[in-house]
Amino acid sequence: MKPHQYYEGASVVVTGAGSGIGRLMALRIVEEGGSVAVWDIDAEAARTTADMANAQVGADPAHPRAVAFTVDVTDSTAVRQTAADTVAALGKVNVLINNAGVVSGAPFEELTERQIRRTFEVNVLSLFWTTKAFLPELKRQRRAAVVTVASAAGIVAVARQTDYAASKFAAVGFTNSLRAELKKAGSHIRTLVVCPYYIDTGMFEGVTTKFPLLLPILKEEKVTDRIVEAVAKGRERLIMPPFAAVAGLVAALPPKIADPIYGVFGLNEGMDHFTGRR
Image (tube, rainbow, N blue to C red; front, side, top):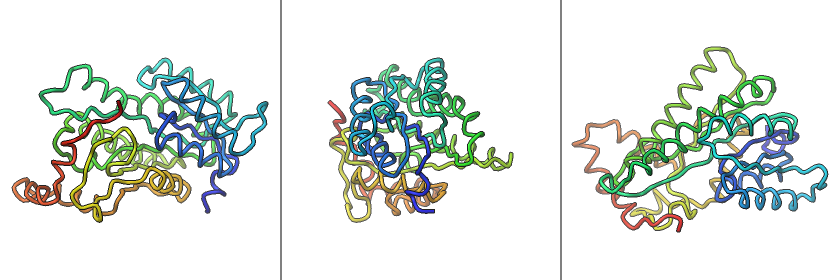
């Protein structure tokens, strides 16, 4: 099934869609014939994404193809209410893309309790609240999928990512277990876990790579295209670039073997000049 055939007439929720790959995914899905609920904690950013999506397809203002919702995905009560509002606005939901995420990028000793809690609330707990809120609706649809945008940090943990890597390992574990549970129950709902290396969004401003041919800083447009396509093709795991999967195999080796290999590839130095969004 080609991507445009999959999204034609489908309704998709994208969290963290006010910027970055979340915004690009919303724009691409609308372009492919779908409707999108743009979820973001930033009301203005969410409205901007929705306006951009509607403008690119010349949507009738009375029947927009993208609708903005202001919601804090860490608030389970707000998520439940906004999920109900979303289904009412779109008429249905076929795909949930859990894209919202945060990164601290600080050494462990410098992390504050607030930063650590925020990382887990956004990157992990929100997955439970959004998926629980939409699962009954997804069960009613023929096309249905739950997508988790995790990270290569959920496969290989490096320096200055103690909270972030732990949260992404949890995100990968959540999706793997959910997939197993749905399959055991004979459910038609598919899952996809996405594990990209660093992406050239403001979120990871300042990160570096020692071997750009093997581990490039990914272009957000390419990542967007790959995710949208992977959902349409029914893939269950997407690791970018492919070499990141090899690094995952190295992670299974004893630390006395794996750590020197990581040293050769400079993985523990990638966050040294991290600044993130200002």
